[in-house]
Amino acid sequence: MKLLRVGTAGAEQPALLDATGVLRDLSGLVPDIDGALLADDAALDRIRAAADAGELPALDAAGLRIGPPLGRIGKIVCIGLNYHDHARETGAEPPAEPVVFFKAADTVVGPNDTVLVPRASRKTDWEVELAVVIGRTARYVESAGEALAHVAGYAVAHDVSEREFQIERGGTWDKGKNCETFNPLGPWLVTADEVPDPQKLSLRLWVNGELKQDGTTAEQIFSVGEVVRYVSQFMTLYPGDVINTGTPAGVAMGQPEPKPYLRAGDVVELEIEGLGRQRQELKDA
Image (cartoon, rainbow, N blue to C red):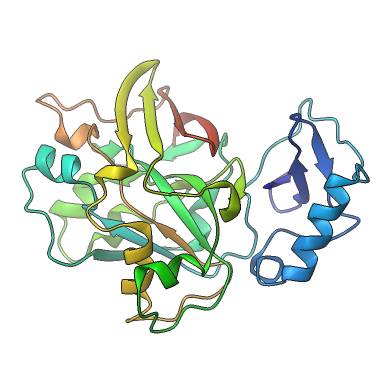
């Protein structure tokens, strides 16, 4: 299923995109798309049954904002330097263990919402990423294969980053990762049954119409299953938590000088095979 949330920011309603591309209203069945729903197999089965029976009313998509596909996100765990090609372009050694950092849930915006360039920013960068949404509590998971059973679904994430704040200002990466609007998510949460192998997905990103990133999750140093397993050794993952799993080559930081960092007026578009497409215009904060 392709689950999503539509409407004005803070007042989104749950919806489903059916196999014919028609937007369907879920508000009569469930209050929201969130961790509580993803952990409730019976509720998900009711949605599937209603969709298959053609019982869900259609929504007029014209002019309707698409919000983040997940409400009440618990935590966003991010994995850095998780693609072989991205490590090569930045001159970094592939990490022996996953590099873990966090984004606050309040960085999440809709897939087509405005992204704000922070005040005093000189190095705002783009990163297309596969987001993993947790559906079952994961605690000390023993194997990568077992870990995939804890995944409810997948989405497109844009891990916007300010590289000067992240790398040159001391401390941890968090200062360059948690600026307002720095995690567009969506358009859909695609349930895991529609993604039989998360290591066979293409990822692309364009800036002002120019293709910048063209990669595949096959390049991940640590697979989706291994990332979930690993993270569960250090923290408990709950339904509604999100993991951003890293970005392929092609970011501004990896380009020759002068590096083409983002500015107000730029337009970024990104997509992941089967998971949908985003488009953001940048403005000054």
